[in-house]
Image 1 (cartoon, one colour):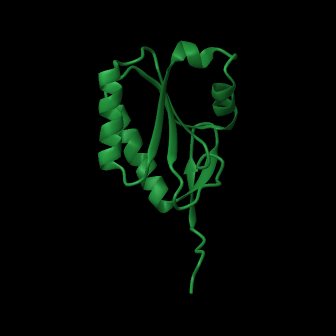
Image 2 (cartoon, rainbow, N blue to C red):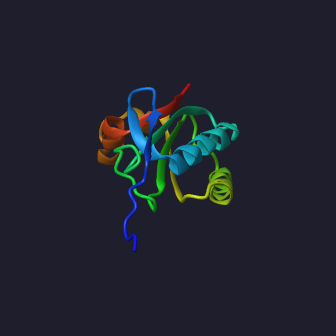
Length: 124
């Protein structure tokens, strides 16, 4: 009986560095980027963080994405994109959206950790 199956990992090359994710996660991340780019948000960066960015993801791991924008979209637009990702992506996606101004500050522990460990997937 197979209790544990090691996932084959593939390389995901970001702008600043690369990481290892499963083929399933890689395809989901690519689809997320395409969906996010279609929103019309004032996109600055899309950054992968969390276990996928650290090459420590497992089959059940979610995809953590930080989207940096010039202006924060309306709550309605944010809920719409989150629902769209939930419908189209077969893996849970944890989407965070912050303004470029907030991201540029160095007083937020969470954002500083993402700056240090995150993989920049797309940049304007």
